[in-house]
Image (cartoon, rainbow, N blue to C red; front, side, top):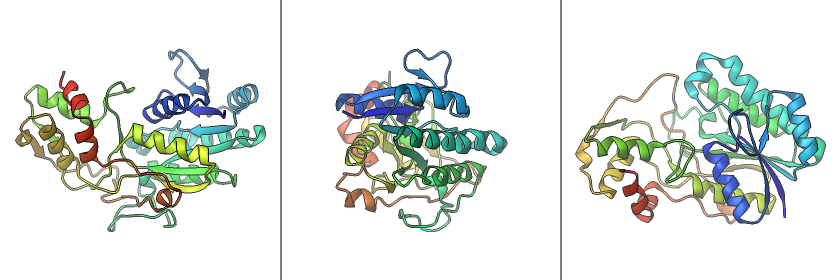
Length: 292
């Protein structure tokens, strides 16, 4: 089977992709930057020496590059750090993958688009990021794409259920509701929340197919965080009236509608992730458990 090295394997997406690939029988080489994290390879993607040593010793067939700084505010405050990790790190990973003959699957974001229009961006549309995070991720895409075999995957807002590295929006909402407190969520920014397990399944299928180029992985349905929060409340039998609207954060220049069309995913025969309502219906018991 394929030897797959995953950078950022302790993060939300990296952990889900690892689980999916291992279940399919692939040999996974998990890599992480956290000194306190046990298991896997210690990898500093900003160090040419670290990347060369790990890649040269493990000799992967595929590299799934999840490691990045996803904190939008941090990227805006420290664009040099964002560039070092998100861009230079990607350059080093891509170069060393080429040295050992490995294909790169690079993780990108819907925020490479400005989101000022109607949304529904296709893979062929020209990105125009509006903040430091998006600019760093677009530059990282361009660095990764220097290798013709690279697959660039753009994903929307990801969330998990059950055992995930950190609480995501559903857990935060349900914990707040369980205390009887109000949930404040904006009803302006249009998102495509995607269950990370569904996205990992798409990754596995694309890797097994040897796909290259740019692919969007996103549900067809869209919603605001306000509508999503009310859906979560209704699913577990709590009053949606506890969910109230709040102005959306305007800094740092967040896209209003950076939604993705997953046309190429369909062309490749890979089913898109379920929408938020489908996940809520299919995983009601898990959502109830999040109430504590």
